[in-house]
Image 1 (spheres, each protein chain N blue to C red):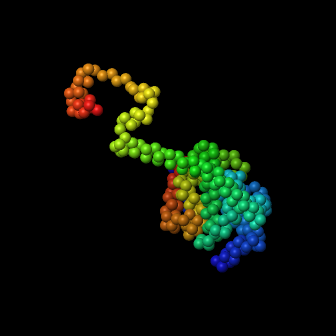
Image 2: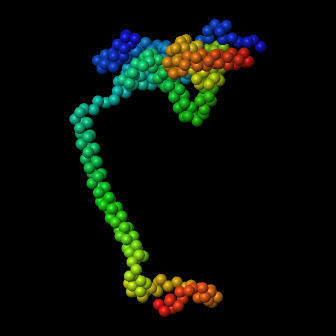
Length: 139
Length: 180
C-alpha cells in the first residue's frame, strides 16, 4: 500500500468551476437586489398617524376592559360576604339550631332528612358510651 | 488600517455608500465565493449564500465596530451563512448534515461546474469525514491559503488550537487516501 503524504504531493485544487461571466455580472445583480431589500422610508407624518391610531386602539381596549374588571371586583366582594356570614354563624353563640330551623320552611327541612340505617346494637352502644345523653334528652 | 477606516466611513456615508459597496463586492466576491463553495460544494447554493452574505454585510455595516479587520468580519459572516444554509437544507430534506454532504459529493461527479479528477474527488470525500471544525480549518488553510492568524480571527480559535486541528485533519486525510 502506497503511503499518501499531502505535503509531498503538488497542491490539489478543489476542482470547482464557475459559470462564464459570473463575476462580471454579480456586483450589478447584487446592487439591484440591495435596492429591493432596502427598508421603506416612513415619513414623519405617517409615523405620527400610526402613533395616533395606536393610542386610540389602546384607549379603546382599556375602556372595554373596565366593565370586566368591575365585575370581577364585585364577585370578589360577594365571596367575602359569604365567608363573613359563615364565620358569623359558626362563632356567634347566640344563634342555635332552633334559630336556624326557624329560618327554614317545612319543605327545606324535609329535604335535609336523610334515612340512616342503624342496627339496634349500634344504637345501644352509642347510648351506653355517650355521657351527654341525659342533657341531650332534656334539651 | 487608516485606509480601511476611511473605506468603512465611505460605506456608512449615504452619499458614498453605493459606490463603496460596489467596490467592496468587486474586491471580495471571488475570495468569499471560493470560501463558501468549499463549504457548500454546489455552485447554485454558493450563489444563494453569497448573495445572502452580502445582504447581511450591507445590513450590519453600522454595527461593525472595527474590533477585527473588515476582511475577517466578512469571512465570519460568510462562514456562518454557509453553515446555516447547510443545516437548513439538511432539515428541509429530513436528513443529517453528514448525509447531505455525502449526497452532494455523490452528485459532484455529474456536476457540470466540477471538473475535478479522481484524486480531487477522493480528497473531497476524505474532508467530508472530518468533524465540522477540522473541515473548516483544513479548507481555509489548504484551499484558501489563509494564515493561521487570519483563521484565528475568523473562527475565534487560538493559533495553537488551529495548528493542532489542521495537523489532525491532514493525518486523517492521508490515512483515508492511503487506504482507498
